[in-house]
Amino acid sequence: MPYVMVPVPEEHVEEVMQFILRAIAQASIDPWDAASISALFHEVDEPSRSLLAYVARSSIAGDDLEDAAVASMIQLSKREVTGIMRELNDDARDASRPTLIGSRSVSETLPNGRTTEKRVLSMSDEIAVLVQAAERAELADAPQPFAGDA
Image 1 (cartoon, rainbow, N blue to C red):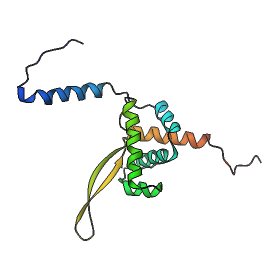
Image 2: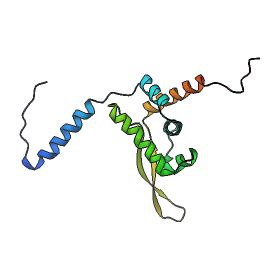
Image 3: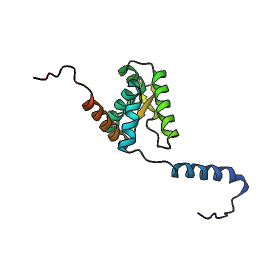
Image 4: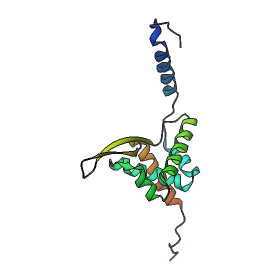
């Protein structure tokens, strides 16, 4: 691809270069597909699978999933959940893939009228559907301890 020289005011050179670098990085990202999500889902540990599954279910349902609620569901601390989320997203970045789990702060109004911030985890709908499919495939492949041959 040929390069084009464009005049940029000196005070905006750094911003323009950052924009260009971000655009190049985004262009080199491969989207997640069923095979790559399935491979990731099978290679991570059980707490990571649980986190992916809970966030996927919540995202598909359109519900806000608070990090404290996830920590309680998988019986870990909020700090451990944050660490797992960071590891998953670092693995995604290293594989030149989009972020798996995002987080944002949401204001919540308490019954007494005060507001508080809570951290909510989310996932894109496309990735959530792929994660649910990987989870279903894993459950179907798992041995059924109470299923008899009769």
